[in-house]
Every structure is written in C-alpha cells, then in structure tokens.
Image 1 (spheres, rainbow, N blue to C red):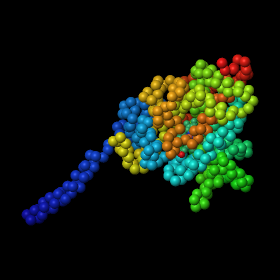
Image 2: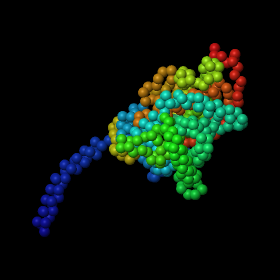
Image 3: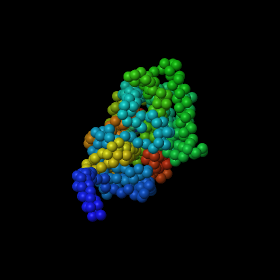
Image 4: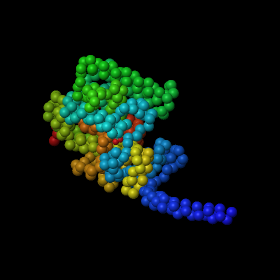
Length: 477
Ligand code: HEM
C-alpha cells in the first residue's frame, strides 16, 4: 500500500515538473495577450442595441467616445463590436490593414440586393468588379452625362412646383434613381425604366423592414420584386447583346468583361451588381441633397451668395447651353456647401467590417469574428479636427482637411467609386434650383429621422415655385 502511495506521489511530482514549462508558457501568453478595449457589453443577447436605438444613435456613439476614448467595445445587433473613432483607426481598418477585415452585412440584406454585389466581397472578385464599376464612371464618361442630368434636374424641379407640399427626400430619391439608371444603362427605353422603378421601390421598402419571409410582409414582397427585377434585367441584357450595344456605361462594362480564362460574368452577377450600384447611389445622394436644401434654406446670406455664384455661371451662356464640365468644376462656394453638407450630415455615420483574424490595435485586442466600426460621424464632428463642429460653415473647406479626417465617401479598397458622379449631380441640381426656383420649408423645421440614413424630419416638407430670371438684378456684382 505504502509503495503504491509513493508511486502516486512520484507520478504527481513528475507530471507537475514536466507540465511546468507548458503552464508557464500559457500564463505568459495570457499576461502578454492584449486586452479587450474598454466599454460595456450590455445585457445578455440584446447587448446595447436598445440603448443605441432608444435615442439618437449619434448621442450613443458620442457619449461612449467621451467615456472610453477613441476605441471601445460594445454589443449590438447580436454581435460583439469594437468601435473606432479616430482618423488613424479608420485608416488602419480601411486602408493599411484592410486585408484583416472583411465587409459584413446581414444575410437578409444580401438576399435582397443580391449576394454577388461587389460590396459584400473582398479579394479578387471584389477587385475585378470594382474595376468595372470604376471604369464606368471616369471623368470622361460622367462629363458626357451633364446634359442628361440637367434635363432630369429641371424636369424634377418643375414637377415639384405643381405638387403643392412635397416630401423633398422622396423627390430627391426619384431624381437620384433616374441619374443612377442613366449612368448604368445610358438611354433606357421608358417601359423598362418604369418597370425597374416600380419593382425597385418595393425592394427598397423591404430592405429596411423586419426580415420575415412570410407572405404579406414587406420583406417577402421585396424578395418577389427582386426576382422580377432579375427578369427585367435579363430582358435588357438580352436586347443589348442582340443589338451589340457594348457601351462604356456599367451595363456595357459588365457585359464585355472576360477574365484571363475567357470566363464571362453570369446574369445573376450582372443583375446583383446593377441593383447594388443603384442601391448604393440612391438614398445616399438623396439624403445629402435634402440636407443641402435645408442648410441653404436656413441661411439666407449663404443662399444669396450661392445664387450669385450660380447666376454668374448662368449668364456666361445666357442659360441657353448646357453646363460645361469646366463650369461644374468652377463653383468654389457651391462645392464647399456640398462638402460641408457631407460633413455636417455625415449620412453614413459609420461602416461595418469583421475581423478575419485576431487583430491588435494600439495594445487592444480585436478578436476574430468581432464587428469593427469606424465612426465617420464622430471624426467629422470632432473639435480636434473641425472647429465649432456643430456649425454649418462651408468656409472651413477653404483649407483642405487633415488626412483621414473627412471620409464621407469612406476610404481604401471599398471607398465610394460613385463620389464624383454624386458631387456632379448635386452641383447640377443646385445650379438649376437657385437660378430658377425658390423653396420654403413647411412646418416644424427641426428634428432628424433615420431612413435609415439621417434626413430632416418628414423628409423636409417644402413648397417650390419658379421665379422669373431678372437679368438686370441677378447679374453678379
Ligand atoms: C452623396 C452620395 C454618396 C455617399 C455619401 C456615398 C458614400 C459611400 C461610402 C462611405 C462607401 C464606402 C462604404 C464602406 O466602406 O463600407 C461607399 C461605397 C460605394 N458607393 Fe457610394 N456614396 C454616394 C454615392 C454613390 C453613387 C452615386 C454611386 C454609384 C453611381 C455609389 C456607389 C458605391 C459603390 C458601388 C460602393 C461600394 C464600393 C466597394 O465596395 O468597393 N455611391 N459609398
């Protein structure tokens, strides 16, 4: 018995001695392993989602940053997240270490847009599709769109004058949709345009609804409309192929693509990317345009100055010819109004990525699988980078912002390829608006609504009317 006890003691002693280096290594690793960022994970399962949406989300982000600093953890939409609120952190995630993070969207949203849309992807497929989108939007191509964008802007503005009170945001959505269609297809038969419009509107409604795929729900209707969109696009593709219409627009780029092995894109890949670009272009541009109208409406002196700048351009050709590319590139004050609106409204307050491996940033651990959110809005509203950040002040853009402090179009491999087109259409709409029309905001002027991008409450109800151009009076001093 005694011998057995001695043997057990020897065995225990030996196994402790042998495992000591292993335990020591583990302890060292545990001590050295970077810690999670500060922050709170909220309640089990729901985390801090209710807290985020029970108030203006921007107050949530700003109060967290005040409490924890530029990097903090939280738990929203069922996922652990790390939020980052500094220019360096945004650059780290989106540019220098972009390969460590992948885009991430809920599956329900991917299903509606189409899983092959470029912004759901990373790597070769993304690079290849992104090139095609970029090739459809170079300056040489978008400058040729100016006369058509002008026609769309004028016809939209004129239609508002006869509608009484309009929901500015909804009207801007129509305008942005039409410009999107123009840049994707060029001149598209009106029957196709109407069919796309009708079905896209149903898709758009379902995108932000509860993803319950039960007949009668907005989500279910959206999935059905999305199928119809694929069929309509298939018809357009078939016709373009028959007519051998391989233009430089996005449809032409997608149709004429062949990889190094001669493989072409499938119809699903083409449809998903067309819907994806329409989706990326519409609400974003429409929200910013709505804010621009509000900011100009609220600052009479600024509006008069913008009008003077635009009237001077109008008088260059007596308003008889379309705007030239050079004119759209020489609207310094109006351009600064656009930039300041992008900063103030920060309609894309943040973006989402997911860490594909454990990542260390400034001594903190971002665990694999966690969501990572660079907070553009916090950066745009930081006193450190923009003096008096709550004030609408276009003159701040007389000096270029510091690197990575102004990111309305994102940065890095997923940065917005449509940013020049977006700015062009905003400048064109402002030109025609201030030279030929007036508008008055109706009702309460405060408040923000999330659609899901922030827009003035009720979409900025406003009335529009045409003003005769008084050549004498309106000439720029
Ligand atoms: C004022 C209007 C717009 C704003 C503020 C805006 C903003 C953005 C931002 C911030 C991103 C990057 C998102 C991320 O990194 O996760 C993005 C991506 C994108 N935008 Fe825009 N955008 C606008 C208009 C447009 C327009 C007019 C088009 C197309 C004609 C467009 C097409 C795209 C596409 C395709 C992507 C995905 C790029 C990729 O994943 O590689 N956007 N946009």
